[in-house]
Length: 466
Image (tube, helix red, strand yellow):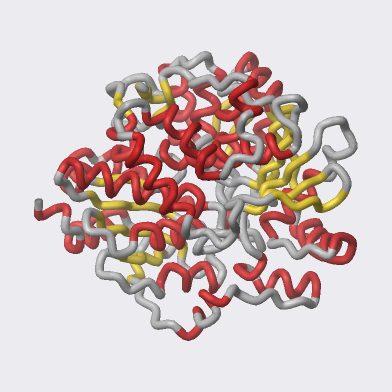
């Protein structure tokens, strides 16, 4: 299996090198040179299989022969042994024809655990095989950071540095990061927004001297390993609802576009998907792009669904590359324009290709709160604000022949103030996190300055010494 950059200038790499590289050296994102295919018979055969076994079948199509079968199986088994539900990602019927896919049964109560518990094991395995160390860097609007830290804590071959926007995550999200005191974990609270954090991470990857010196690797959704792991639950959910014999519509609350792009990958691999629906909060750049044909930055508003308070949706580049018939030069020009002038027009043929696969909707703050309340009143089901965005948008697409699945991305206890304000019900953390509020915190506050972040990482990482 070979991988190419969305900007067409970086060298073609194999799976293991792509996992360690994260971002391509030309600034693009890696995608498979061709999409692996599953037959209808193979998809039908997933019925009643363990999640772990379906994961092995799908992920092995992306690893090729670079990781031994027994090693990959063991990593998958241990990754999902950390989950509190035997199905890993169970389906719950919210209302007739409308289902919720619970992706928050991992150790940090967010869908990011599904990918990061496996990605950490993959990276540690690859580095161990090569006798190397790496510096993991990432930006988080809330859930990615805690899931990455939990997955990488205490690992011998990596140090992890996570940037989060100071004061712009929920308290529980922050504490899930800052109360992990392992020596290889470094939390950076940046004076800025998530997009500022993400911009600094991208800038570090594009500074090849620093990147090579620190042996940088990324765990944000730009890392192909994240996407590959997320593809699995689209198959398990669809098969549980009758695939491949009937199509399913998926509604995905998304900010960085990685979660829903995994659904697009599943469809490219052969899963019969009726529609992929992008659900955004008030930060609706993706919704506007689909409807207006322009991808324009307008600033980020702080909302009750902070993990979606994102303006530059990194994985959207992967979709645009596909819609441009994989023309890397054109993709590079468009995203260069985004960097220079804060926006670009999506070419008409590419927009038509995207609209054929995707729909979108937006839920503002009032709608989000009302949806949390209504889900509890009518279905006796408690949801977090991100899931509420998805449920609100999904209701515009129910009633057809295809069942609708809304991806539930976080446990409601991660956002207790919002949920309690909407319902009068205070959601409690599971037992393994019940004492989170009293744990010691450790973090470093840094200015929104690339040089300051680089100096901090250079001084702390063990990879620089190798």
